[in-house]
Image (cartoon, rainbow, N blue to C red):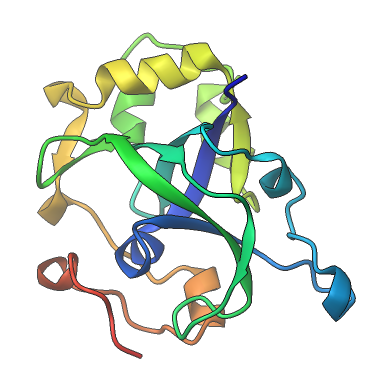
Amino acid sequence: MVSYYFVVHDMMAHFQHGDMICCKIHPETEPKQLKPKQQMFRKIRRGDKIVYYAAGSYVILGLFTVKSDMEYYSDDMWPSVFVRKIEPDLLPPKGKYLHIKKLLFESNFTFDVFPDKRLWHTALRGKTLKNLTKADYDKFRRNLNESRFLVRRNEIKIPVTPWQRSQGHNEAPTISSAGRKRKS
């Protein structure tokens, strides 16, 4: 049975590894018994569907399918994390993104994942992912190409998030470098 998730990353993470999602390692675990910081990350399975949200930029980058089991991963961009490989199912038109605030506040849609639209951001605070109902997933799918909810790349911010700073990345990529891997 397919499960649905709302994944909270940031634009830099997508530029660094657009084919993966990650979760920090729980700091109190023994080296031989590492666990993800958010236990829900362990429950994701191959074939599950995700809505990829870029925090700080307020955009949905697309809908993806999980293609791998959870594995430990470490490189210069993502040191010591758990990852799952992902593959795009549906992306917004080239050079555009679905703006979550437009979708939430310029429509009459309700979302189970955000029971109170006014406090939608608090539902995501401190989370890597949240369960998503199929109905919510389908609303994101239906509106991913809806022009009234889209923004161009040059209209969004690409902030350096606290997680990126903790990884030693203090500078956001520019729009022109967005498709290329950043160098450390």
